[in-house]
Length: 202
Image 1 (spheres, rainbow, N blue to C red):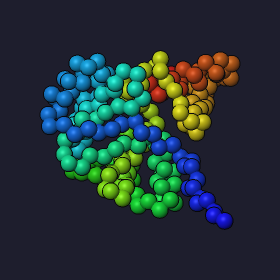
Image 2 (image 1 turned 90 degrees about the horizontal axis):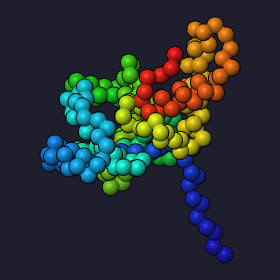
Image 3 (image 1 turned 180 degrees about the vertical axis):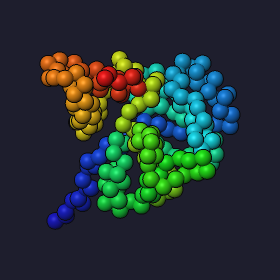
């Protein structure tokens, strides 16, 4: 009699494969190539550490690319709670770095105290040396997600958005001085604006 091997339990924390870094020798040439293909330019800016971030998205794709130079390029996993993601990976036997953020002279321990969205990172490697980069995002920058295409891939992600909307709506009701009977519309507007990087309602 044989006994089937027990499979590991599915993860409980969302790890979204949203960005793949591809190696290029000339970032500007590669950027022109992909823009000529009709890919949306999401970002082109210099980070605080001096590195350049160039992100493009193919039409209709939920996953984007970063144009990178160098030999060891990470693969991005987007999380809404980096500490919860670290804890789950560590519980599964993975060696994960401490949370850090980028600074002018390199990585700085801990999340960015002034900008939590995009400002908390951690890394881990697989057995072959491929590096994964966890990046905490709670509010998108403008241009990353179309307001017409906002989606949630899990109940956990939607619940977190609802909690943030509820907290913001509580402040809204304090300012307006009473119960807002149209709170469902306010929640929906807040969540879509937050995910697509638009100015949030007050």
